[in-house]
Length: 265
Image (cartoon, rainbow, N blue to C red; front, side, top):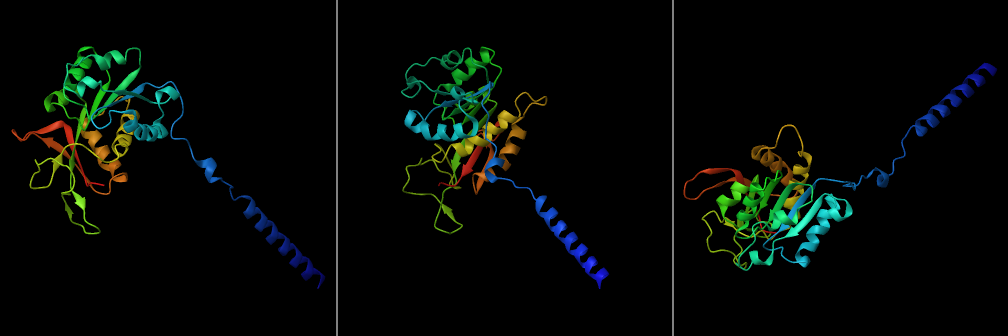
């Protein structure tokens, strides 16, 4: 009886120790502590965002900059992004100064420029950057300027076309006749024109990519850039198309010019 009692006590003590040990090894991780900041202040080479058609005023730019600041930080707070706005002369068809952007960036360390809704005559500004020996890359997003001039002065060009709107839960998409849209619509209901959705959905993947490949030994190509965007845009658009721009007269596909097709929000 005495031997049996001693054995039972030892077994109970062993089980208790095992249970305590299992509890102690479980990590106590706070969800809040595990969240890392999206960016860290530093002395960065900058990306310049240049606002054009549809984004001319501080009121229109404010919600965009708020989202971009959260993801990348603004230069004034030791973040990644500098901002500029096309001068008013570009919007009222008056004589423009092609060198305005280059002069506005004197003394700044810039490795990329992104124009949004670039107005007419912007290609002269891009040519001025090239002639001055600017070593950074230019990305033209939804430009309204001369196509060949824009392609020549840009690393990558992205245009926009509407794929229509969705009717309730139907899988069918149609043109919204209540919206003010161009009458130059093809039989495929494609409309190249002004993007009216959330521009940050387009900009954030683009900025992430050009930031990540900056200074890499193997330079980015338009083809690899588009391959990345094909995957990245899936997180922002439920359905979209990303296709090479085709010249309507020659039928030739552009090497650095693509068209983003999305359904209206």
